[in-house]
Picture 1 (cartoon, each protein chain N blue to C red):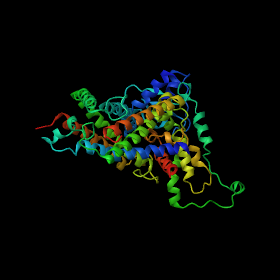
Picture 2: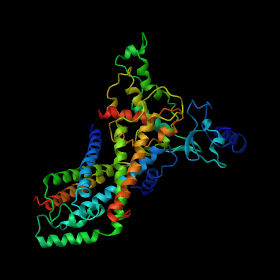
Picture 3: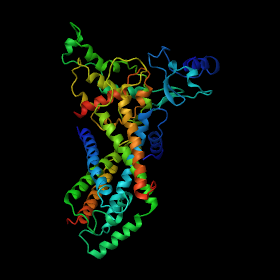
Picture 4: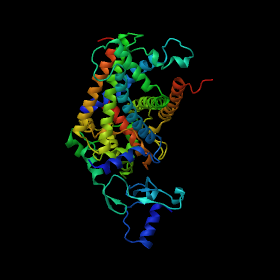
Amino acid sequence: MTVLDGLIYIKENLDPTLSVRYSCRMAICGSCGMRVNGMEVLACNTQIVELEKKVITVEPMKNYPLIKDIVVDMSEFFVKQKNLKTWLIRKDVVEQENPTRQYAQTEEELEKILQFTYCIQCGLCYSACPVVSNLPQFLGPQALMKLYRYLADNRDEGEDRLAAVDKFEGVWRCHFAGSCSTVCPKGVDPALAIQLLRRAALK
Amino acid sequence: MRWSTALQNLKTMLIPGKYGLERWSYTLQRVSGVVVSLYFIAHVLETGSFVGGVTVWAIPDYDFAERAYREAVSFLKNPIFDAGLAVIGLLVVFHTINGVRLVLAHFGLVLGSPRRREILETPASFSNRQRALFWLSISLAIFAMLYTLDALMGVFRP
Amino acid sequence: MRERNVMLLHYATGLAILLFGGIHIWTLFFTYPFQGTIWETTMRFDSMPYAILPVYRNTLLALSLLGLLVSTTIHAFNGLRIILAELIGKRNIWIERGLFAIGAFLVIYGTRTILIAHMLV
């Protein structure tokens, strides 16, 4: 029985007013992020026996405004991503809209970014990051990792990607506390992406 | 300034929770940095008093200098300050070696590289090389503290 | 590009402290004339290499101390600026100016100490 099963049981039998987000029940949609016994996890991915405790404390994720019970407002998380233009930018926009062939990418070029494409935007890293807790305007591990994923992508031709994070609240505020990579349920390792981004920015 | 936010932020900085080794490094690097900075300020002022305090701006005459020197030495030469110096030695060496590790990590040098991986393998940024440097910083720091205790107070003299 | 330059300075001064600090510790702990056991030669205030009772009068040593002073001030106060900004949740121009002022005072005061103690004034 997973934590999510437990919450659904509570909702169906004990307290119908409980609000919780969930969807796929298989750790791919990223909706059910929450803190269980003080640690950020996906509720559908966490077996209750694994926790080895009699009493389980479920809390909403940190660093997001709370809406109700375990449901948090993730709009800031997505706005920060959007401001960094984390999508493929090609110089020839017309050609991008009407492609005639695929963009060439070798196996090595793909492996440089593949790991970072696994992000399901669950927001657990943003909740775990100590810098986001202290400095709300910090861009956050997910946005920075996403930016690096496009910076390192050989198909991307966006300009000034680095200038967008070279600010007080940008990549420099990451102190490699590694909490993001510890909690990521998909093994994306945002800490690695941010250090590689820093290396690109320092050149 | 909101004191409640400051207190909450302080707790976030100081309590590493269950997040792993790098979070401990973040906390300890900050704590050691702040403590050593305060020691640095005190040290500049203290060594300033060796030549006679803020009022002295040219080389003073011998008797005044000798008196200032002896005063400063008599204030500083006690076992509590020696033990304090041992703690400072511990923090400085930890901060330095961990700082070197952070410089290397920030240039992406001792980290693993992005590659095809299974989910929930140890993240490449938590590489063994990088963690070994962290443990090196802890061990060298303890060694430095023991050396300082011995050098100043003869704790391990036969 | 400004924050990038500040961070480069932070890394560079950190490594500079490694160099100058090593020299500082070396001269304090390892280059004393033998006086009894090896433990008694270190940190004996009676034989400090620089002071009004000069045993050494060395310009290179003074310069390396000055380098240590400047690098450490920059590194420490930049660190404190970042930690304070994260503590209160945003940047504050008065804290940054205050830290700069204290740092400048320390550098001036420390330079005075170094120059007088090495009899270079």
